[in-house]
Amino acid sequence: MMRQLTRLIGVLAVSLVMAAPALVLAQQPPSEPQGEFLPIDQLPPAEQLPAAPLLVAAYAFAWLAVFFYLWTVWRRLNKVEAEMLVLQKRQSRQREG
Amino acid sequence: MRNLFLPLTVVTAAMFAYAPVAIAGAPYESTMLLIQKIFYFHVPAWMAMYAGIAVCGISSVIYLFKGRPAADRLAVSAAELIVLFGAIGLVTGPLWGRKAWGVWWQWDARLTMALLLELVFVAYLLVRAYGGPGSDKLAAAVGLFGLAVSPFVYVSVNIWRTIHPLNTVVPTLQPGMRGPFWFCALAFLMLFALLLNLRVYLATEQTRLDELYLAEEDSAA
Image (tube, each protein chain N blue to C red):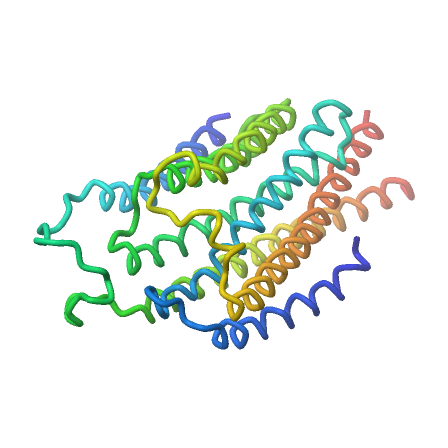
């Protein structure tokens, strides 16, 4: 019970830490107001963000997330299969004995 | 299901290997240029999430009213994939928005509701992990709630004034973009089917393990 509670508190703490930067960014006051609206493609080059790093980061995250998930499933499957093997061996020994 | 796994893996891998070629060949959008190419992963990820919500929600209903364990295994498997694909959507979106809108995030209707929908299914997984006995039925109710809420997230851009593009973007795509988009959408749906297949296999093995432990306890008693 205590271990489960500790684990739950740990998960909630990690979730809060992960969400904190997003919450802080969302709270930030807007930068200096412009005099007029300018479409993004008309901003001077110095004020434009490069698109390529953002695009690469997006695709990289998608791939990493999928492979991370695959790794977690593979790890859990290995654990279950190992336990099953031990259990099956124990049960067949009990039946023989 | 196991017989489908290898062909599904091969086809999905081939599609994802070709996807960058298809995306690079698509024309640039006139105002957003390069950054708009996140669209070819961003929207399909949300489509895969919605496929997961349909599977999880319907399986949860079947489990709640018919009590079939296979439906529960399908629901929990789909819930994990909902969180996965939702996370991809929630990360690729702000990366696109930072360039296109000038901000990482806006608390507008679509973005906020999408985040809340993701959190509903995170709650599903937390309930399953920490809820103790009876958590399977409680989580199934959460899954049903997520299914009920999901259409509102989809139509939120039509109901409220939001910064997010409208749902009419996909049906009105320029011809050069349609092919790569639907190719990536199909690739993501196949990836969803593949991962679901794998995760259901894990859930089935976990059930078998539990049955072996119960059989051992019965024989010891």
